Length: 221
Image 1 (tube, helix red, strand yellow):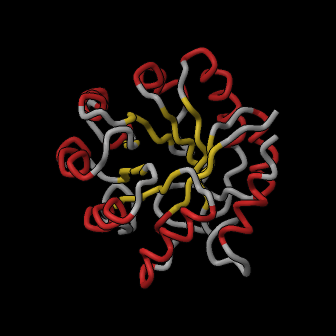
Image 2: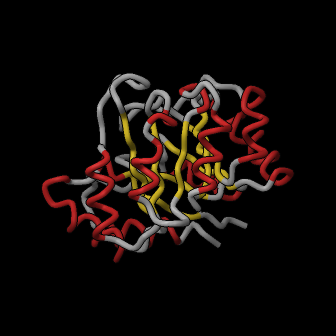
């Protein structure tokens, strides 16, 4: 049985018509909007900003999934938490913080959903203690920082390991990066709870969001 949720990677949206993009994705039936924040230090790219997050939060009631690809997120975490609504998700990268559990505690205390993002080169064993704390795990199938990258095939075995652990520890497992139709069809039935859709399936396609999301949801049985 396959049952999963869908969130749209907003860094891939048309920022010249951002509100229209948000409304179109709402109507198409996505479950949440994924906001990638990059500082040019933890990852070699700048992407969405705090102001982008504030604007999107002001024009939608959809849940927001904020992926902080920044160094030492605890330094600035309050700025993001003040912008979000209770129940929104905040992912941090454990490698980016000296004491990630302290940052996760701040996220929990603010009424948000705590999550960690696991890079392709990060082993599951090094984040086992974090898996006990968080409600969501974002498995990166590409190195973070840019859209449109190639899938790293060794990530599949790690995702399957996390699928087994989530049953024991009770977290949701999400897939981020190079999410193709083949990956939806393969890993949805295996137990991945949600997928972040970017340019491979959702954006820059020759048909509308509503039609695409309808086809994606047809895979859920």
